[in-house]
Length: 638
Image 1 (cartoon, rainbow, N blue to C red):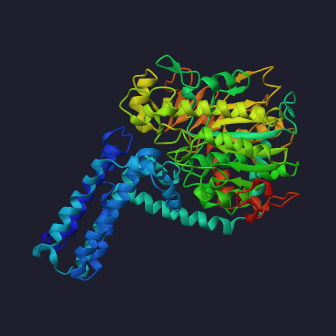
Image 2 (spheres, rainbow, N blue to C red):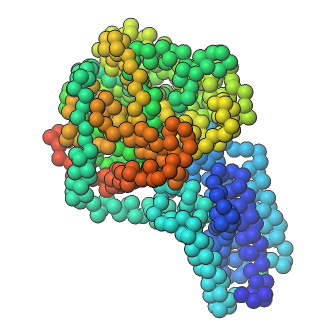
Image 3 (spheres, rainbow, N blue to C red):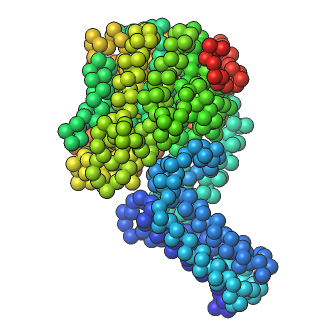
C-alpha cells in the first residue's frame, strides 16, 4: 500500500499499534507463556497483528465519519477481552473459552474472589483508550479520506499475508498445532489470544453438531475399548463395605503437599494425619479437573469420565443422559443426596443433579446461614458439617451423599478467631493465607467425624475424603519453591503438585488394618473403587477408571491437559520426566502411553459431546424429576 493510502487510515493504524504493543506487554507480564527460542518469541510478538488489522479493517466498509468511531469502540471491546483473560488467568492459570463465558451466572456468587483478582495497575490497560479518545476529537482524524476498492483489496491482502506468515511459522515450530485444542497456552502462544477465541468459537460450533450426528455405533467402539481394559476387582475387598452408607467429602482446594507437613513447628493438618492412620490412604493420587474445577471433580467422581477441555460439563451438557453413581446405586436400594450450602443454581447444580439421578439437594436454603457463621463464599465449614450431620441422620438408609466444603477457597480469607496456625511468610499473599484456611478445614473435619460418631450414622458408613482440585496455581511458584525448599518449580514439580489426598475410611475395617497405597491413581478411579467396596459389579458400566485395589491395574493416570503419570514417568508439556529424579528421560520412555492418554480423553469427549449414553441400554431408566430434587426447607417432607 502506498504512503497516501496509509495516511487515509492513520487513526486505524495508531489504534492497531497501541493494542499490538499492549497485548505483547500483557503476554510478558500477566501470562506465564514458556518461550524456548527466538522464533517462538518472534511469533509471540507478531501474533496479535493479523487479528487487530482484520477487526479494525471492518471500519473501511463504513462511512468515513463513522470509521474512526468504530475503531475506537472496537479498541474498547478488544481491551475488555484482553483484561478478562488477564483476570481469569490470575487464578485459573488458563484462558477464557466460550463455555466458560456461559457460566456468567456464577459471577454474582464469586464476590471477594473476583475483586481480589483485580490489581490497581489494571487501570493502565486504558491509557491508549484515553489517547485514542482525544485523537478522535482532533480535526485531523475526525473524518479521514475514502479508501478506494483497490486500496481496500491491498489492505486485506496485507492482513492475509500477515496471518499466513504467522501461521506458517507457528506450524513449522509446532506441527499439527490446530489439532492440539486441549493445549490453550500453545494456541495463544502461536496464533494470539484473539485468534484463539475465534478458533474456540469454531470448536464450539463443531461440538454443537456432534450430538446431532452421533449414533450408537460410536458408543459400541468406546464400550469395546473399555471392556478390553477392564480389570477384575480385588476379591479380598470386594463387598468390604456392603450395604453401608457412602459419605463423600469434597475437600475444597486441598493439595497433598500439606499432608504430614509442618510449618513453624506446627502440623498443618493434625486431624487428617491421625485419620489417615486408621484408613486407606493414597499418597500418589491426582485431581483431573479442567476449567470446571469443583464441578469437574463432582462429574469425574460420579461418572468415571473425564471432564471437558473447555468449560464445565455442568454447564455445557447438563441435559445429557448419564449412568452416574446415584442412578446405579438407586437400583441397589440407595437414596442419594448432595449437601452444599450454596445457591442451587451455582454451577448449574440443580439441573445437573437431576441428570445424574440425585434424589435430594440440600442447598443454602436448608441451612441456618448468618453473617456471624459465614465468611468468603458462605457458611463456614464447622457450621456446615454440624448442620449437615443433622440432615444425614434423617435420610433413608443406605444413602449415597456428597458434602462440599467452602472455607478453604480462594482468596483464602478467615477471621482471627478461626486461625489455628499463622500465615506463611512469602511474596504471595495467596499462599500465605492458604495454610490457616487449610488448618481450619482440618479442625472442621475433626468436629464432623466426632459428631458423626454420635449420630448413629458413622458405624454403618464408608467415608471417602478427597481433594477436589489445586488451590495454589503456578502463578505462585516462587513462593511455593520457598515453602518446599526448592530453587524453582519445574514442570515436573507442577504435575506433582496436582496430587490431592484420597482417604477411604471404613469403621471396623480400616481401623484394624490401615494402609498407605502409593500406586498412581486419579479421581476417575473413585467410582469403580467405591462400587466394588459396596459389592456392586461394574463389568457392564462404561467408565475409564479402575478399582484402586485391583491387583493387576495399570499404574496410569491422565490429566485433562494431556499430561499423564505412570509408575516411573511423568509426561507434560512435550517432555518426559523420570519420577525418581525429576530429570528428562531418554529413549522415548513415555511414547507407549501417549496414544492411550489421547484416546481416552477423545473417547470421553465423544461420550459427552455426542450424548452417547442415551444409546446405553439399561434396565432402569427412572430418574427423579427436577421438581423432586428442588430443595425444600423441611427435610421431613422428603
